[in-house]
Image (cartoon, rainbow, N blue to C red; front, side):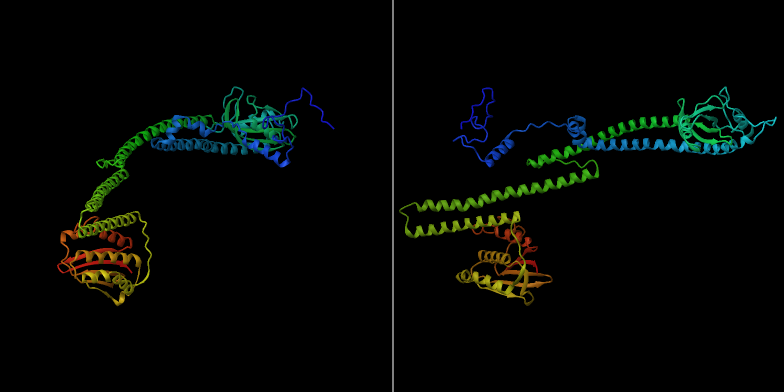
Amino acid sequence: MTRPAEPSGAAPPPPGDGGRPPGVDPSGGKPLDRSTIVGEAMSDVFTTPVKTKRRFTIAGVLARIPLFRWFKGSLPGRISGVFLLAAAVTVAGLLYATPRLESSLVAPRERAVESTLSLGALYVRFLPTVRTDDGQPLTLPQYPSALGGLFGFGRLNQNQQKLPGLGGTSQRLTLFAVVGNQTRPTFVDLVGNDRASPLVRRLALRSNGRTSGVTSVGGVSRVEAVEVITLSGGQRVALSVWQPITDIQQTVDIARQRILVAGIGGASIALLLGVWVTTRLTRRIRTLEAGARKVARGDFTAQFPGEGSLELSSLARALDEMQGQLAELETARRRFIATASHELRTPLSTLQGFLELLEDEDLPTDRRREFVMHASQQAQRLGKLASDLLDLSRLDVGSVKVRREPVDVGLLLEGLLMEFRAVSAQDGTLITKQVDPRAETAMVDGDRVLQLLRALVDNALTHTPAGTPIRVMARRSGARVEFMVEDAGPGIPVAHQREMFEAFVTSDETRGSGLGLAISRELARRMNGDLTVTSGPGSTVFTLSLPA
């Protein structure tokens, strides 16, 4: 059965590999399995570039404002922002307190009108029992006059004039007749010149009751106390006692305006003061920064003025001390490089000279042997110098680890003597040991101690005449153990004793690199100890003191 041809108007297959239909192998046109099709679809999803919309955030918008960047990124801006924030918080606190001030001023008047209302409501309930001169009961329109005449309530007459009563207070009394049903009552002012306030209208929707609060009638704010009373004949009246509070509001508004003006002025002064203070501060900091950058470039002539606050003065002194120490380190480094170069050049030059002499084919055999021996000695000296430099660099970078463990001191010194037995026998030198019974065991790094003692014994053999006796001793001194190497040589000059532990210092430039004692003292200090020397004619003692 043949597949019908697709109509000419059909859409071409979506482009895949060379326009192939989806799900068909491009090589042979065979259908692909489901896993392959799903894999291709997922590959298309993950490799299709996704266009993301650029989102604008508040932080991003603020970051584009130069003033905001100044407040956020610079020290003057940050300190000025602190001053400004303090002023804003102060103003906000004062503005928050003004409504409370208004409430505290209104509260006494509210209590006063409530007290007046209580007295007035008592007499309103009594008025239905009052009779006129001809014995007739009072009508509602006569109630206000009765209240004013009998009980001294101040009220308003038709001409908005205050009638006698209530002394010099500004309280007002209004009596409304509540007419109509309870859901849609109508209020008739028995005085004839006042409108029912929202407080009266809300209360009249209930049967009876009392309420008080701040309300407004005709744009005039007032504190009002209202009570709805049902008289004996079923007539409902609303008695309102109120007092204007426009004077309080005006006072609070004036206070609020003055607080705002003072706050804006204070914030401006705080901002200017913050800018001024921080500008002076940052000027001194930039001076110190410029000096530090000079030191970083190797210029040790920079000045760090100590003027200003105690903190800046302390920082300037610290920078001065740092500069002095760096200058000393730089001087020592240059001296070390120069000395190391000289120490390396000397054996190299000598070795090169012997090698050039050895190129002579007519050189006698004994002379050739002598030159080879000297060349070998210079090569050994060069190797020793390289090894010492490597040890010194390791000590400088702190890569030398110290491991304390119990060590048999007698066995340690016996091993040391075994190492030098052949050399001492060749020179006719007698090396002996002496161990204090209290120092037979010590908590030290045995390998490092042996390295130090080996360097000291080698130094004694090198710088004393052949046959000079050498003694290695160990003794306990309190909480420390002391290892001593003593020789009976001619001694070390006093001037040389002060600098003999520095690098490349040696009493005999033809022997040694001058690094052994420097390495020994540095290693002793890494073990929380010290290496000292006492010398005189016929006796030189190097003492290694370590915590035991």
